[in-house]
Image (cartoon, rainbow, N blue to C red; front, top):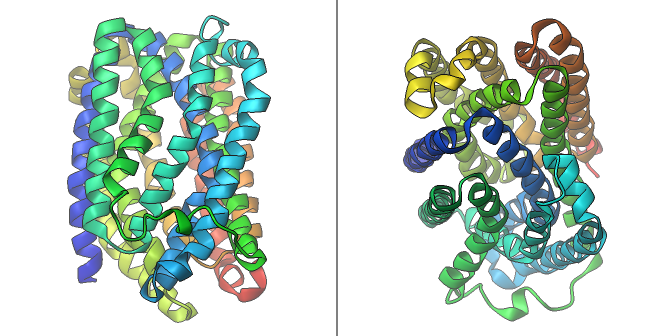
Length: 421
């Protein structure tokens, strides 16, 4: 418990810093671009998140799990999973670039309603190998349970991303913000490589030598789960924003995007604590009873925090809108209540869902993730016609509630070895 609280404290410091930077950026975006610029930026961010998620799939949670399990045995053992992971990531980067660069005009038009931004697509794709290696470094550090260094890297990454965004946005307006979104993750990866190259585990032999089929199978299970997340949520957001724009207008989509960004910021402390402490901890547990006890302990500590902040944000929403945005975003005040309720349900669901990652319950993870995204899109399409932007939040809340029920009532099946592939 003390480890969780200590990690949560450091995570809270990082998240407060991220929130501060996020709020500053949101304010500057609101001033320089307005709701329409917020919507455009959200579309590109979802694309960047999606393609980054594809190349990061092999070097994410799977590396955290197997590094956490075997870090006491040394880097020679851990590298059996590192080598196939980075090989898959680099292969995905090459394949994506070959496929997407020739269609950069079409992708630009689909996302931003213009072909003039095709260079942003190309820049994003060129940066993918650096993004993947940066993620590998973060995953290894997390798996080694070097929490202080992991949090420090998080601070550095946030500072780099925020500085690039602010400078580019103030200097070049919406074009600068879009360009920053394409560049920042690759630059973060380069910086993390520079910070880590003197580590004992940062040696060529641990990343670029032959690997074995058994470890490839282990990584592939996590690749399939990570690819599902990488493709499902970002492109679900793109589809939902497109529905909003088509059936309302781009300004309304920007209002909803503003509330979504606030939601992302405030639950960040929980997600960082879960990914930093909870996943490595669950990966080290083999007994179902121990897993359930750990879940109850984590919920006992984070649920009051989540509910408290949701209530505070709701009653301070007018102040938050005035502080972070401009008067153009005043309509967003009506979107908070249902969104915040959905956030609480989301966090409870995630605590249970993390067991699918720690136990490698691949089919359950993919099935529930796809079900959630499809149900959110379908319900949004229905509710937007009646409730406008609020319909997205109603669909979000309802979909996560059903998602939670699916995991909760099938929990014993999920953690059984027979559910793993």
